[in-house]
Length: 129
Image (cartoon, rainbow, N blue to C red; front, side):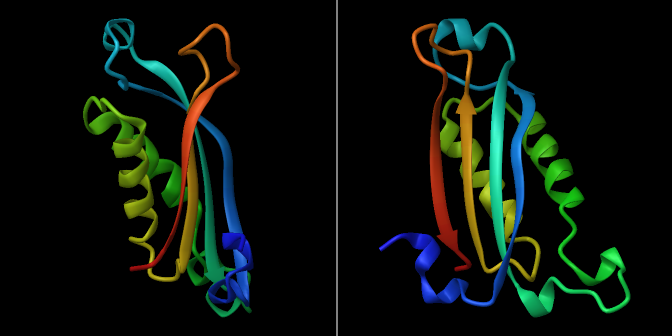
């Protein structure tokens, strides 16, 4: 069964950030250790409609996706990451810092690592613990 068909997502709104490009110190190959590289981040937040609706049209009433962009940059700048898995897990954990987030689907991609493929990446889908 596709994770998106999971009944726990019923009544949720999907808030997403697509192809957010950052420069990160990531990788374990010698050529990756020499310089920061471009990483593409994709995040889908699943938030119950009642926690992502505002009767007053005020950002304080909903999960504000600006926090996500800022946290991703902070996380990427914290340290060198050998693995995309480690960076991605930190990003997903940060998504759950927002009280209304029920589930997160996220991925990272390194588009310039190998000359013979468009990108290499990983993806995870997690529900709030």
